[in-house]
Length: 230
Figure (cartoon, rainbow, N blue to C red):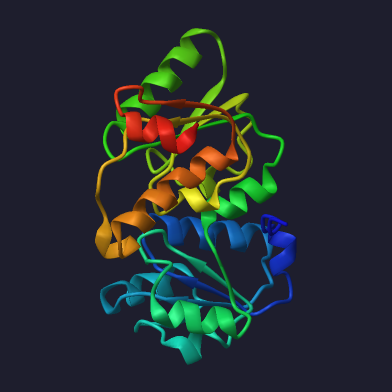
């Protein structure tokens, strides 16, 4: 059975931390402040980001060092920035002790289960393909949002009333996707092994988008990709 996608209501009254203060981490903090204004929160970020984080979020507990397994295990939920590998040993150790690691992408899909979504991934060409699909949909009169790894983080657009969502999803995000009306995989080549660890895991993570898509479009010039998604 698939684990249900998380929602903000699941975080209420729990021990919650945000890991990373890039665009995704900032979007998560803003969304949490709007939807769970009384929720105590902890942030892990770089030392160069800590002063800005404290100024922007005075009530936030800001820790300017990377957490270890013991620190992570003190929380029920950790909202992790996509650039932090899900395969780090401290994450595995904290998961074994009950900590759930989620992302802004997963939270958006949990809150917007009714959304009509086109998800685009691929080693190369996903930004161009996403932008082109959004342009064509708008030309046809569809109110279309372009987001994800391109444009604004999804949690910045929780209340947007778009009729169609075109989301660029990196290999760091494909595993957090909810149901897709259409999935697009532009191509598949070896990349980001520092995050995924092995070529096999990179490939498997990319192909998780196929399992979320009701209809799938892939590059016919790559027979191996066709075989893997048949």
